[in-house]
Structure formats: C-alpha cells, structure tokens
Length: 595
Image (cartoon, rainbow, N blue to C red; front, side, top):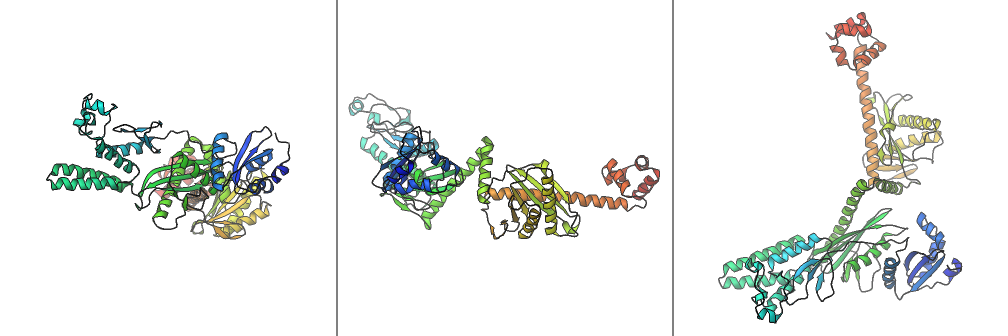
C-alpha cells in the first residue's frame, strides 16, 4: 500500500489524457476511469461534494492512485474498456454478457457450405454476425436456400475425387435443392457466383442478386423458356418481399450504427441498431446497472465501445442522440430531421420497450427491486428528501352540497393498504366549502396520529389545485408539521402537480410511473369517498322514509334496520314479525303504511 498522502499523489498527476486506477489499503483495485486531463479529473473526486452515497464511500476507501498516459482521449476510452474487463473493479459499470451469439458461416471449401454456428474456427472460413437471435439466422438461411441451390453434404469435393466419380448425387439434387457439384453437374465458377450474391444479401444488399435474376428471366423469356422464366420470377418475388419487410428507411443509409439511451436512477438501457442499405440487420439492447453518478454520456460512450467490439462492427458512421467523443475515424451524427431522425427514434422506442419488459419481469420475479426502483423514481421526480414509503391522499365528496364527507387512503411501498383507509364526516363546516373541509380533515387526521404517537407519512397528496393545497398547509402549520411532511396537490384537468409556495406546477410525463402512482392514489381516494357519500345519502333517504310515518322516531328506525337490514325487508315483514321488534302499536302503523 502507498504511504504517500493522497494530496501529494494528486499534485504529481499530469494534465494529459489518460486512464487512472484507484486502489484501497489492501492494493485491491476499486475503480478505473478515463480523463482528458488526468490531474483535473482525479482531483475533482476529492474536492467536489458528492450527492451519491456510493461515490462518497469510494473516495473514503482510496489509498493510492495509479495512472497510464495515452496520446488521445479515444485511446483512453479503449484502454479503460480493456482494463475494466480485465480487473472487474467493484465500482465500475461492468458490461458483461455470458451469451454466445450465433453466426452465419461460409465454410472455406471448394464448394462452400453455409450454416449457422456459435463457434468461430480460424480455418479461413467467413463468418457473418454475430446475430442477436438464432431466429434471425434461420430466417436469413431459409431465404437463401429458397433462392439458391446449395450443397448440404460434407464431402471433400476435391477436383480429382469428383473426376474419379467417387460421389453420387443425393435426394437434395432430385428435389432441385442442389445442382450436384459432387458429380460435376455445377461448375465452381457458377457456385461461387451464388456465394458472392449470398454475401451481399447477408449484408443487406439485394441489388446484385435482383439484377442477375431479372436479366436471366428476360433471357429465358426471349428463348421461349417460359416455365424456367417463371421459376426465376418466383425467386425475384421472394427477394423483393423480404427486402420490403426489412427496409426501414432510405436504402442509401448504408453501413451505419445507431445508438440510443434511456435511464433512471438505477439502470440505463442502450439500444443498438446496425443498418445496411436501409435495412436493420442487427438489433440489441443492453441493460447497465449504475454504480456511481454516471451520466448518460459516460454510459453511452462505454456501451458503444463494448457493443461495437462484441458485434465486430466496422461502421465508420454512427447516429447518436447527443455528441459523444469516440475514435477520430468514426463520424458522429446527431440527427434532427428526416430519415436519420426516424431511425434514431426507432432505436429509442426499442430501448423503451425493452425497459418496460424488464420492469414487468422484475415485478414478477423480484418485487422488492421493483418497489425500490419506483420509490427512488418518485423521490427524484417529486424532489423529496426521503423515499415516500408511506403516502396518504385526501379527497372531499359533497355532491349537491348534501352530506359532506372526506376520504383518506393510505399507500405503503406504492401499494394500497386498505385496512388503514379512513372516512370523515365534516363537522365544523356549513355548506359545500371544499377548502374549509380539507383544512378540517387534514387537521383531524394528523392531530390524531400525533396524539396516538403513530408514524407520520413521508408524503401527503391532496386531490385538488392550489386552493386545496393551501388549506391543507394551514392545518400542517397549526400542528407544527410544516416542512416535516412533504405535501403536493394534483389538479384533475391537466394532471398538474403543485408544490407549496411554487406557483408553477410540475408536469410529469404521461407515461411516468410516479404520475401513475399519484393518479392511482387520487382515483382510490375518490372511489372510497364517493362510496361512503353514496351510502350516507341512501341511509339518510331510508331514515327519512321511515321517520315520515307518524309515531315512528329515530330510535325505532335504528332498531328496525338493525333487525331487517333494509327497508325492502321491513316492507315485506309480517305484522307479527314487526311486533316482536318494536311492539304491536308501532308495528300496525308501519304495516298499514306499506300495505
């Protein structure tokens, strides 16, 4: 372990591009990073205040700093990627992928076979890929085999063996899936012309194949060989249909890599599309777990290097959502309009769909991780100091001013806790006054929680705009809870989120999970409040119907409802049955009223 103080180590760092490595007291590597200016970047770890807890822990553990100077920033990027793979430091994002991807192999033979494989053998054979799924490989191979007759046997078709008649054509020849090179029925030149066209198809270029087949079809038609011309026409249609399905944008967009990124507090998702002649020939989305305070720019830069290496991409042009420093020979384009922007938007959509699928899977497999992610997202979106594990939402219900009531619903870990829901009859407010009702209910709720020493929520949601929010704040002020509980209001019309003392509302993305949770809270409070209000009104209507009978008072009505549960059953009851509950005199009055 280095005994030289960190301050001294920092003072001797160069101001050139390079890669730095942090080590702990046991000389174990903690972190690898790149920098345009080593001294400035490494010093920032020790002078800057870090919001992220893991970064603070990392800085406390650093005991020695090593560095490697390189000529350019792009060299630093490549070296950083290699060192991360080699040492796998604890605090680095590790872009690991244990999958073996499939390739299409054109075997190094006199009459090359074409087949899928997951193993790359250095025997001079050509490998195209890797592809992200075997399904894509089989789709391409099915297309190729439906257009070109190729051999599938493993014979060594050396010229002398073919000339000596060592082999006999098989069933594939009679099915017209092979032209029989094993007996010399197909020349090596003709076979290799097919292979060259197949190379272009695999790259996404159908031009040469279509040109050859069209000229062949015309020649056969001129020779009056219409049946053979029709067979060629069928092959042209197969190629054209496949080309139409795979062409996404302008066919002039050729040999281009497209990358996009979307992220949240814990993870980032980078989508990669590879384009050839306007067709997507490869698509892959990578999930990256954040370790420190990595920006989207840093993660995208790291992902581009890794993905291009993994898929052996040699494209000299990339489309990105924002500028990222890459190798000098790679042209970076940030599209704003047209076909290039369309393909970038498609890449971003792929990343979003992948993210949604992961969320659904995690919700089933690991509900705790799903909850933690939502809590972290809500904390960030609503600018809270703590995760809102316990949320309460209030709603008033006073239809046409009658029977004013309010509801409080409780969510724990973003899920309804129905046993904690509470109803409130408005006691101190005369008439339909939403603001005063909200003030009363919030005061009563939290006065009681304080008296009973129950835990307070981390977030209160008020169903309403600035007026209702201000009323609720008055109650929090009266109880001395202002600033101790976060509170927001949600206005129905545009789903605006209001904060105390902030006249400008927050508009969350309509697909945001934070907004969905708040909407669920508001809708649940509304449902719960309306149900209570409806029950109260119907009960009031029942009571008034029975109390309208002369000589029947409130207590008698309560006795009857306790026994019969509803007015319908009271109406259907016999006089003797009623008499057992309230006596013969009152029973006669009720029976005669309804009969």
